[in-house]
Image 1 (cartoon, rainbow, N blue to C red):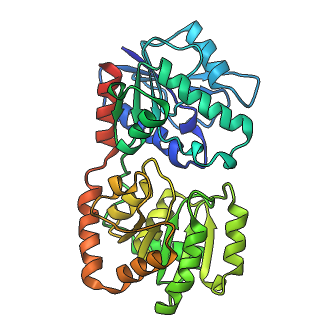
Image 2: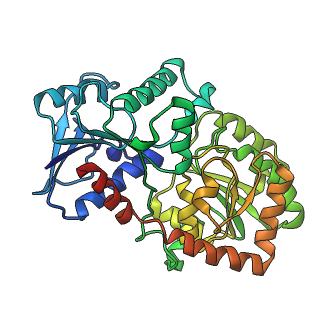
Image 3: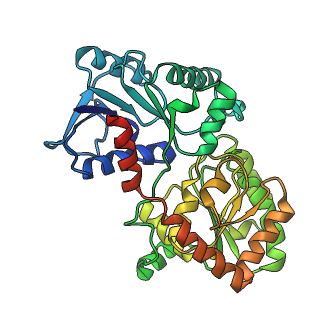
Length: 367
């Protein structure tokens, strides 16, 4: 069987959520040495991160525009030479596609954050979600929360939706780490311990502004602590940056932007606490990565996060600044509580692996 995969997102340089999912699911499928052949579709000129082999063919597709590669270039390729199965790791199914096309819908957060998108981008996200639900042979979602959202809001057929959790990179996010390298990373970004760490785009959905306000309360109890924010700028990021600059403790707040996976792991190991204040997540992979590193997690109780974090995190309301600060301080100062959530975090993170994700995904692809 020839399984075609849209590998366009996996070929981007600075990966975030859906890009890392595409990269890891493809890498894990290829590592499985299954009896099937994979055909990876990428835009011509893309930085291909997968080598052609007897099991994987890389097909570069030319398209004259910087947009609509999926609906244009990939659709034309489906006319020329369609695979037995087409897998789209992110929900934009090409207009022309094989009967057995399977796609992953990660979340529908764009409905709650319409203002974060240009009108044509919002229209495309909404249209492509509806199109995928109508025309895809099978839908994969990354949490039970997203599945129920699709059923409730779009009237999707729950019998046609498979929940397959994301995994973590066990070679990077694990208990053991290189302390010398970690110190080098701290020096590179001029970060001093102890510090709180948060990971995610600097945008409204990630709720970093609320964390900045909570940090002002935390400093009263933990005056020696700093706050480190990892992530590129997103919608409303300028507002968050202004909040950081206007904070009375702005000298203790660091925004280091995008970092490599190895640097992210090092910072997680060195952090006293990982904080995830997001208002909406279809999954929340950084929580699992932090747990795998043995970093205690203070987490928002919004959307899919309680489902994913399980008993390996202490929760707070993302809208309650005082409660957020209280939970973070408790996790940093009470040794018995820290030990509890570190141990529970290890147990919870062990349930998530890209190998398991790939096995489940392949089972859906070949069913």
